[in-house]
Amino acid sequence: ILNQDDDDQFIRNGDVDYVQDLSRNPLIGKRVIELGAGAGIPSWSALHCGADLVVCTDQGIADRIRCLAECALRNLEDIEKRTEQSKQFGGEEFNTNNDLNCGIVKVCPYSWGTPIDPILETIRCSNSQQDKELDQVHLFDVVIAADCIYMPDFHEPLLKSIKLLIHRPNKSDHRWGMALLPFALHGNTKDENVWNIVPLAIEMGFEVEVLEGVQLTPQWKNMDMKRGFVNMLRLT
Figure: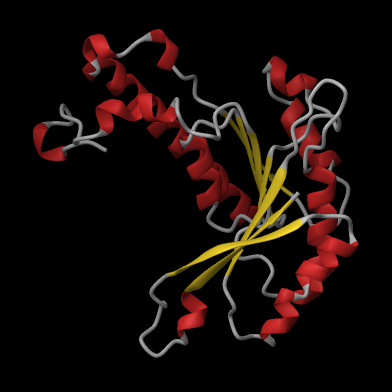
């Protein structure tokens, strides 16, 4: 973020427009939850993109949850610093319409296929009025499960959790939530076993779209190229 050679006084090109860029992001005002977070990169990305609420979940392993909580804190501090710097260096072009508040982020343990009460309770512990009003009528606009479907035995509990968490239209809010499932084929099972999540999701009442994938460089030199290809499913 900062040019460390100049005593942290100068922002790199483009950072002046940090808040202005956020004001145009489609995640502004959205509630996002990540399942099977691992390092939590999608969660921190959503937070940096202006989501109002981000909930980052993974298995109830103490060190894993602690690390995610530390990452959440560091990203919050980073966003606050960049926002303040944008105000200072934005000059007259900076206006109050772009003065975005940092979103709320929560970290909690959660096992797929189980009731979502712990997630709701974690959210309600906040002092935010928005959190206190959150209930099962208005849940999450975006559910993210990145690289979580390579083990077919977990497809059903994962989909059950998504169905519990995704926002569905009601009398006061006609928006549909969505789930995004980016994944690679790791070769631990037949490819068709991984792709079987699509008919299962349809059977469970989801509409499924297979979006365009992206080829990345595989992690190791002799690795199959398909293991570096990121597939994407969108569920509504």
